[in-house]
Amino acid sequence: MISYQFKNTYFFLVSLFFFSLISCNPSKNSKFKITILPKNETSSTLQIITGANQTELYLKLLKNKTIAVTANQTSVIHKNNENYTHLVDSLVSLNIQIKTVFSPEHGFRGKADAGEKVTDGIDAKTGLPIISLYGKNRKPSKEQLNGIDVVVFDIQDVGVRFYTYISTLHYVMEACAEENIPVIVLDRPNPNGHYVDGPMLETDYKSFVGMHPVPIVYGMTIGEYAQMINGEKWMKNGIKCDLTVVTLKNYTHASNYSLPIKPSPNLPNDIAINLYPSLCLFEGTNVSVGRGTEKQFQIFGSPFLKNKNFTYCFTPQPNFGAKHPKHENVECCGLDLSTTKPLDKINISYLVEAYASTLDKSTFFNKFFIKLAGTNKLQQQVESGVSAEEIHQSWQPEIEEFKKVRVKYLLYE
Image (tube, helix red, strand yellow):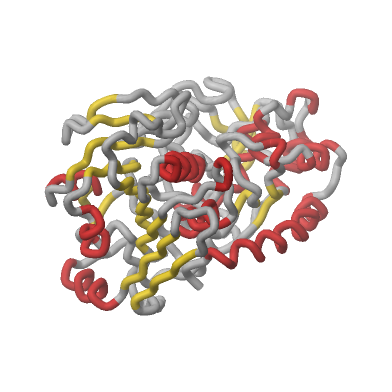
């Protein structure tokens, strides 16, 4: 897969020639204003350049401003194959006035468990105040934005509806729109950007793990998704954000892309990220997805699966990213998917087969499942014995309708 391999000379030559910014007027009645200078060149032989790495493009928008940065451990500027500088450290060194750092789920350094409370604090390296946007305070308050001229958003997403970074994006944009503060999104590739799949979220099941009427896998970068939040008027009262997206160079939705830094503690590699849309639904069941092992989201199993096909067994233990994993110290049997060919759709057969093979079906699903699915239909289909193929086909009409909306906001082929 293509990974970040930035060489200084190459980076500056490329970035001199290619640039595009997407601006959205905050007026409710405004239309999108698109500026592309000039059109991106895309080639499999060129390396992908992130928005953050194009410092010369956004630095001029931050000069003499007081800013806030929404960031985590993935918010870096790569210097070469192995070395990188955190965006916050870079901006501080360039004398940009940062007042506040907002952090998403898992915290600023990305060390907290999924769902773990993340508290406010002080960054030990820079001394900057860190305000958590995970927990009770998911949206920056008016007081927290007081004195801020611009908010920069730079977080690596994985393109899946229940991955909460897009919910944080929504709330940051909404808070800024209410206070007339511009938002700059530094775009990053979507490792699951090559397909669209899954059930659509129904508004009755809106939550922090699913805020918008999109499928589980929506096939958009976080910059494209920000445009859709604005354009579809999903924020409170249909308000719009003054939005600028610093676009990627040499990227298409068909690009292979390997994340250089784990986006969260339990997505350790490309395989886990690829399997995540298919396996995360198990988080709403009594089946483990390998938290508490070294193969998170690459295996699944439970103490209740009794089937000759489920021959891989593991015992979850507390580890980094899973202080108290599901079925801690209890042997689970299921499947090892770590050598599976990369998927280009959600494999719902894992869920269907696990339900069919579990001993006590009344305890298989929990209340979280419907929030993850974004609909009650999927659980009903599985419980009724509908085949995986029929379930997958049932999603297609709504997916086709979503694609008609999606295409309006795409920045890349």
